[in-house]
Length: 315
Ligand code: RIB
Ligand code: CA
Image 1 (cartoon, helix red, strand yellow):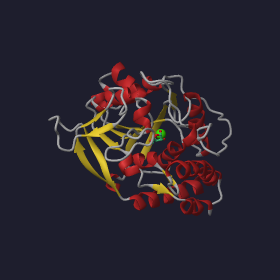
Image 2: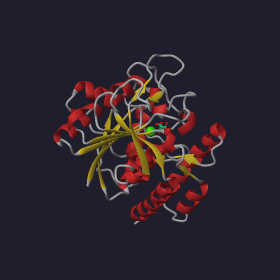
Image 3: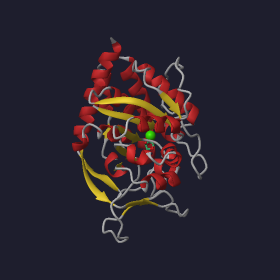
Image 4: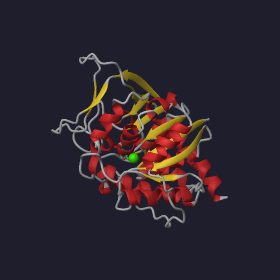
């Protein structure tokens, strides 16, 4: 059993990652720490609580983290995720509250109380994790593994021509986390942009009429409109669920150990993630980078688990 904490900015694809975690018996979701990103921290917190209620999982603690990046001004993504962060989906106001602990304190507490047991899956900007490392450096050695959805190595950016959103939103936090020394797997756009959920996939889910499948359809309909309008993609790229899936199905991807850096020099390439394939800088590899993926194996697994979760939550 893998013990997972998700650091997340829900967000449409984040919500699918949360649902996949709840639908996967191989893992135990120990909590959500919330970070700014796809929408405001307050909205992301409400969304997290509502998604857990939708999936009858209100026992999962939600801890509110950082509202702003370390240095950069706030960058949100309403064009991608809608003003509520969940596209066209309308969830009821949550009846539950987040924990009183700050997200960084929650991360430190949970990681230090179970050395070598927690796998941290970061699917938003890395602000919370960077600050937690600065506050309690011992979490670096106490973490079992860190899986980061972020970056674009040999792939174009989705926020600037070069940079991916989670990294560009807080490049200074990414720099701290990338060089902290935690056993890290990076899941960049190179692989996530091959994982496209299509309308046909969503129609398959809708054959099961339930609040959960209707939520997925309404949330992804907005996301598909964005992908078509901005990038000509027919469907929507589900970045965050792929990162989560690697906690229990690492064989979905192929990896290369690489020295990876992130540009914080502040110019046109701010937030660009750089894989030094020929090790020009003579540095040791600081992470395992997913550069190959079996997209339809992943999408099929995702759909099967959403169908099972929908059946379970409708009963
Ligand atoms: O670039 C994609 C990433 O940025 C995903 O995690 C998405 O949810 C946004 O946070
Ligand atoms: Ca995200």
